[in-house]
Amino acid sequence: MTRLPEILNQIANVLNSLETVMNAEQQQLSAGQINGSALQRVTEDKSSLLATLDYLETLRLTELKTASVQPTEADQQWQTIQQQIQRLSEINQHNGWLLESQREHTEQALAILKPHQAPEFYGADGQAKSAVNHTNKKIAW
Image (cartoon, rainbow, N blue to C red; front, side, top):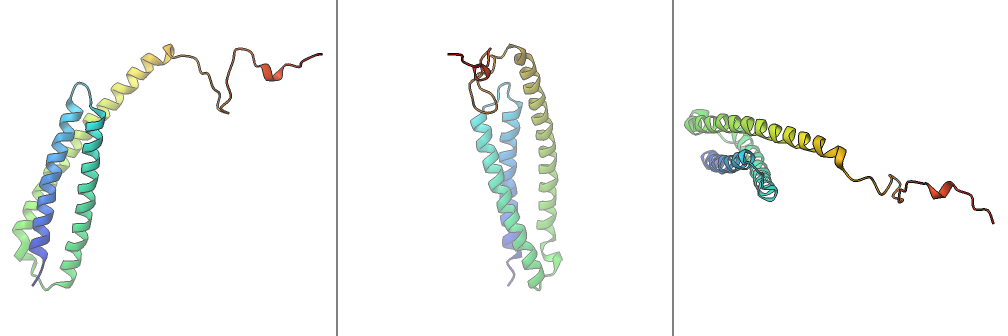
């Protein structure tokens, strides 16, 4: 007996969860002010679900190679999964646009603030900077 229908059901369930997470991501990115910790949690959930999908896809491909299943047995499940994937692709593209917009907004804000930033107190070598470099002065006794 093949496990393909079970694997396809698991893939569909994970895709449904992924859609929920991506919609939450879209809400975070659409908000006037982004909650960084909430967006981080969404990102972690998304990564976890994508890893699970990768694993299930490996199982699906292995099952197709080893089982004597006719592809038509799982056609309806696979078509539903393909539709879910298309919908998720569109959501992901929209989220990418929102993220790019947020990035541009942040860069513009930083450009406005940069001229007003405090002077650097430490150099690249980790040593304190001062208006006059005292290390080059010779002390005469």
